[in-house]
Length: 408
Image (cartoon, rainbow, N blue to C red; front, top):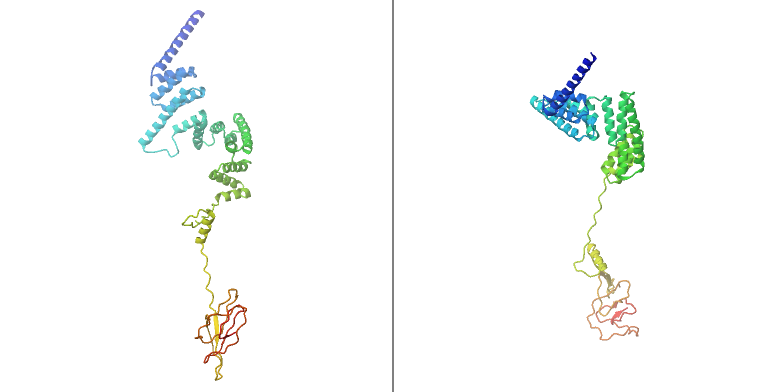
């Protein structure tokens, strides 16, 4: 009896083995609907078999079942992160999903106002929890719009931020996840690691300059933290040192929202927003039309031409008072005032400081003698006036020549 049971067991094992080999052969050799059940059966027995998983995904895409293909390939990426073939086929399957959704929207004439269909939501969840870097972060942000309290998505978003070196934001995401599930020890461990990395970045932000300092400040920035004001001011200072005035102004304004009474921040914003007065133009100087060969002479000539000198005012006219002696009838002498008249034979001294006032009578008709006595010689005797003419009186300087017929 035992021998019969053993014989039946061996036969059953052989049949199962034969069926498994047949299913594997059908999965790898068939396409479309025929290969799908065989591949699923074999993949459950060997989930890490790369060939079977790829064959199942190809069979699903051949049957236009793109969403199921995305799920199969995403699991393959999770089991074998370094497999490039899984990643390439996952991108292809996702593009088929987007194309299919677009065709459905065009046929129905309606678009989903909530930002995506159910398939899109599932794809975002898969990409958020399976991928890394910026692609995972973008998918997590889209998925969290529909599920803002999902701890798995919040933790996955923290993982993506931690991988990008944005430690402050990663701390914030892990804290949100723990707020909804305080007992999650895995998230608590990730939070501790992120906080440690942020403290190191904060120290580099304070000590380093240039690009390294800016990257450290960006990594350590955590909104709502007690050191947020210090980090934002440090960011602004580093940006201003690199001549990035617009970005520095934004950083200063963000810091001012945290501490509106800080005078240093107020002064920095005032300096960046005050327009610079234009430079005063220099007036051109008039150059000489003829070069003189001497720079000093040319400069003096140009200045003389640019600013002409004022003409000297004409000297005031000199007045002469002429008195006529009293006549025989006893009448008072007449006096007239007019412009100065030159007396024949009288020359004014070149050293006289003031003009001369001369009283003269009628013009003497007789000619003057040819020779006059020299200065300092004995003066001639007083001559009698000509008949019919009144005597002439005049003032003279000691060095003026003596004219005959004139009483000095």
